[in-house]
Length: 280
Image 1 (cartoon, rainbow, N blue to C red):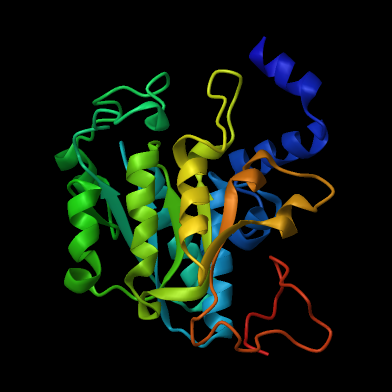
Image 2: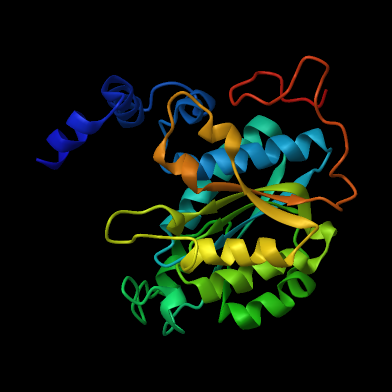
């Protein structure tokens, strides 16, 4: 019944069916599959790919990718897969870091943390099991209030090009967002972001005054040189994938590379799938 309902309401049923067949039988190259979304978590692959594209245009050799809210670790493992393939395509080295308390969600502070959706101890991690599954990603364990204080000084990661926010709560997300104040050496001038809990159903009813959306709005209100904006280039496409609404771009206007020219005379945007990955 679920599959029938999905088919009836799918605006592009043939495209959806084609993607499922391509994924199941591993047809085409990784690049081709990513371009049409025929990969697991295409939003993860998109953000990593575009971050590496930008890094290459700016002549950065290495970047970092962060995930806030690891839980069982499927997201980190997926990032490992995409990073491995994208490194082969673009030649930009990628480091991956996953932030989590390891104990599941803390107690919601108030209505802003959406206690009608989330309970304390949701998404508890089996740390030993996950560490045995990870091949390259590194776990940053502890309360984000603590780990955010010394992460950059202790790890000194390459510039961050993409971040995946899945802390669920307003309180945890705003702490993670405030890490953007840590200095330009730790970030690309424009950073691709995925906010998981900004679009939901009639149960979630996410809004601009609670959760991740509130954290984004408050951050923008208190920062003049760093702004987080929706990805309008995706929302303008003829066919809009649901995850397009969860992609945002962090702009570091005072970054020394923000105004560095990266386009070409006849080029106004980058197309995923282009065979020319070299800087123009």
